[in-house]
Structures are given as structure tokens and as C-alpha cells.
Amino acid sequence: MKNLTEQEREKKFQERIDRGEIIEPKDWMPERYRSQLIRMMSQHAHSEIVGMLPEGNWITRAPSLKRKAVLLAKVQDEGGHGLYIYSGTETLNISREELVGEFLSGKAKYSSIFNYPTLTWADIGAIGWLVDGAAIVNQTALAKCSYGPYARAMVRICKEENFHHKQGYEILATLMKGTEGQKAMAQDAVNRWWWPSLMMFGPSDKDSPNSAELMRWKVKRFSNDDLRQRFIDRTVPQADNIGIKIPDPMLKFNETTSHYEYGPINWEEFYNVIKGNGICNRERMKARRAAHTDGRWVREAAEAYAKKQTAKGIEA
Ligand code: 3HC
Image (cartoon, rainbow, N blue to C red; front, side):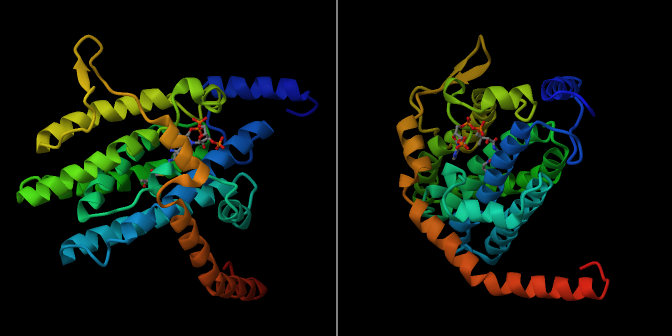
């Protein structure tokens, strides 16, 4: 690629993408490709870490030791996913401090879904079934994205998401076999989490400023609306199986297209939440900033230990 103009380099890069080649950290890439990946991957990582908060709220309130142990494992997994994706983002020549700094300053986004409260135990079921179910659809596609470290991170994450999804669905299935009160609690949770879960896939394609470029570079393999539709098509039959009603009076199966048609999404709510005006935005950011401050001594101790090991010539 030596002595080529920027334009010729970009043309060769696009030819690599079009051939389905995987881009690795040491490969030449357009600056825009790099910055788009940093944006998308870091927001994904921020979301995983913030996503621990709504569920963490129920670890001490879980209805049994078994449920507590499962939820604890899930929340720990999410923390691991965040660290995994942060590490993948660092291969794009940006530091963890910069990434976390952008998040704590409010410059970087995290998924809107985590700005909703978890009001009852059934919410933990709805999150596992719907939120992790949506994540599986999104992340399975990302496992085929053109950037190697991101795609490979998704392989392990998707395996763990499947456990998250199943345990959430099993919580709701159990409640739907319970008392009238438990059934009502499960239905109420799904009523509150269904539409925000559809918003996880991003704005409709016509309003998505990043999609065209990300799809040209095969970072996104499918559009926001395509993945949303895929999630709806697989989730509605699961709701039917356990007697949960999807809170969308316009939902209907179209025999010709073999897809579910669905009602309008409240995009005003979506943009309001990502602007910071969701029910829990302030609470989530306050908790993350406090955790960062409280965790300073851990970071300093780890750095001091790593420096000492390096001084001794030992790989820390
Ligand atoms: N929440 C917050 N912001 C959102 C959003 C959402 N649900 N959907 C879109 N946005 C933002 C985008 O970040 C973009 O803003 P920016 O340019 O300032 O970053 C703007 O809205 C326009 O959206 P686009 O469709 O143009 O943006 P993208 O092409 O980046 O698509 C996306 C959005 C589908 C979320 C894509 O970024 C993506 O697939 N990201 C990776 C997956 C991810 O981040 N998932 C978040 C949930 S994490 C999770 O599910 C954890 C699991 O364990 C539960």
C-alpha cells in the first residue's frame, strides 16, 4: 500500500471488504472506519457495564437461592462482556481511560434500554427474554462483521447471551403457570419492556445516519429494521407459547410475507431517552460515576503492581 494516494488506499480497502476479508488491527484502514468502530464498540461496552445496574438491583431480592445464583452469574457475565469489548476497542489505538472518560463525561452513549426501572422480579425475566433476546439477534450479526476483534468477541458473548435469554424466558414461563397475581406481574413487565426492546435496534433505517456507511464496510451486516423484524418474528411465537400477550394491538402475522406486522414505535420517547431524559438516566450515570471514583484505589493498586512486575522483567 506504499506510495498509493489516500483514494487508491480506500479503493483497495473497499475491495478487501467486498471480497469478505477480515480487517485486523495492524491492517491499513480508513480513519473513518476506525472512528466508527470506536464509536460503536465503545458504546456497546458502556451498555454492557450499565446493563449490570438494573439487574443488580434484584440480586439481593431474588425469590430463591437458585434465582439469586443465576442472576449473579448473568450480571457477572455482562461485566465480562463489557471488559471484552473494551479490550477489542483498545486494538483501535485508543486507551481504556479515554473510552471510560468519554462515557463518564456523557459524550459517549449507551443503550437506551438500560434507562428503564426494574420494578418487580418479573422485570428480570422480561430483560433476559426480550433485552438479551434482542442482543442475540444484533450480536449474532456482529459476529460476522468485517473487524476481526469485534467479530471474534461476539462468538463467546453470544453463547453466554443464550443462557441469559433462556433463564429470563424460564422466569416468565414459571410466573405464567403461577397465581393470577404472578401472571399479572409477568404481563405488566412485558408491557413495559416490549417497546423499549424494539428501540434497541436503533432508529428506523430512513433515520439512521450511520447505517449506510457501516453496511458498506460490512460492520453492520443487516439494517436496523431488518434485525428488529427478525427479533419480532422469533419472539412473538415464544410469547404465545407461555400465554404472554404482546402489548401491540396492531401486531398481526402476514401470511404473504411470513413476517409480523407491528404498530408504530414511539420515536419521540426513543430520542428523549437517548438525550438523557429517560426515567433512570441520571441514576445510572450517578451510579457509574460513583463506582469509578470508588474503584480508583483498585486501578492504582493494579497499575503499581504491573509497574513493579515490569521493573522485575515479569510480564504483569
Ligand atoms: N440506545 C442509545 N443510542 C442509540 C440506540 C439505542 N438503542 N440506537 C441508536 N442509537 C444512537 C446511535 O449511537 C447513533 O448515535 P451516535 O451517532 O451519536 O452514536 C444514533 O442513535 C443513530 O443511530 P444509528 O442507527 O445511525 O447508529 P448505529 O448505526 O450505530 O446503530 C446500533 C445503532 C444498532 C445500536 C449499533 O450501534 C449497534 O449494533 N451497536 C452494537 C450493539 C450494541 O451496542 N448493543 C447495545 C445493547 S448492549 C446489550 O444488549 C447487552 C446485553 O447483554 C443485554
